Length: 219
Image (cartoon, rainbow, N blue to C red; front, side, top):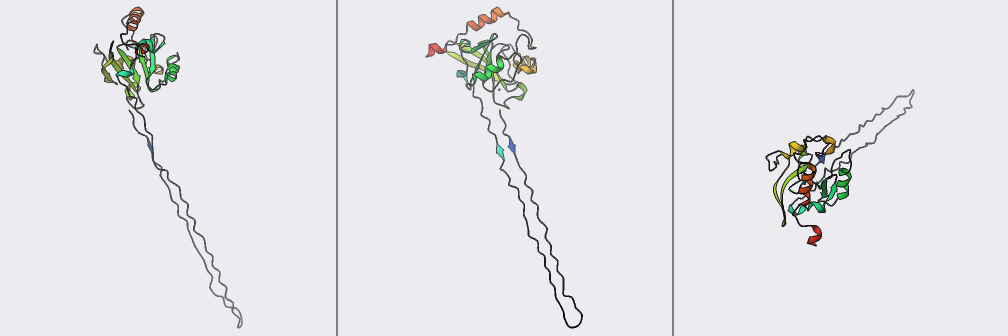
């Protein structure tokens, strides 16, 4: 549940069916019979007009299916906060590797829609991850996580979209949906969410005591 309450959401396929129309031509002909001339001379005149047939057809394209790749999130997706990128007191990452796109939104004080794969955390024990389009329309495709961080890494205790409930029995979605829509469910002090019941000093203390191993220590 990044950047909002403590610490880090599938997809339908789109098909387009084209319909073809066929127009048939019309055809006709006319003729004149023989005519009698004076005295013993007769002249026969024949005229035949034929029209050609033209067929117009439209090529029909086959239906197009757009495949949406799922954003895979597991326990290895979550890092020590110190290995993430800090933005105004919260931390971001991107499990698909597109950190620049995530940062472009996170650093924009006017808001924006986070790209798929974005991870947002305020505390080590909670996170929110932007899943693929269609994962959870009710939560703007965010998936909420309750985590158990330890020296061994990260354990996922709770995960889900609108149905996710935090360790205090509260709905993660309800809290974040109070944010101004332009901030894509990310809560900050001036985004419209209810303020946290603890001060900035305790928040920073929790962030600094993240027990998970650092990336440089693992290498």
